[in-house]
Length: 107
Image (cartoon, rainbow, N blue to C red; front, side):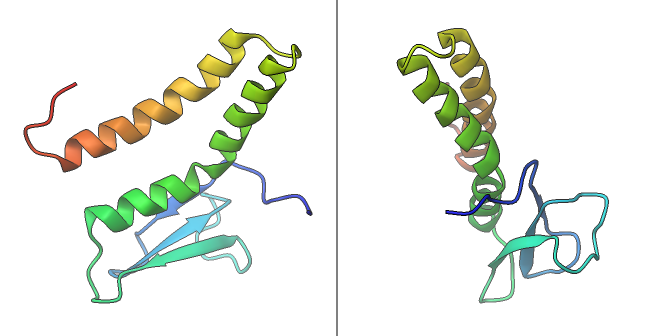
């Protein structure tokens, strides 16, 4: 397998009402080739689910790093603290998004 596009990735829905672009370079909005993928709203309107899907895809490099640290910890090459410090922000980010989508939900 070849190397993936390095992070950070961003989910950008500023350019269209029905497409969220997953991009590598936040500073280069209209550059050709910096788009990794897109999430489309077929009915023409982006929903919270589309945004959550795009955010999950955009977090892939961070999630890979956390998994790599988890494997390294299990093999004795990294500390548990390194793994936890990489994983907590990812989990918290998606938990906050899920809580925002579910009215009346509590921790």
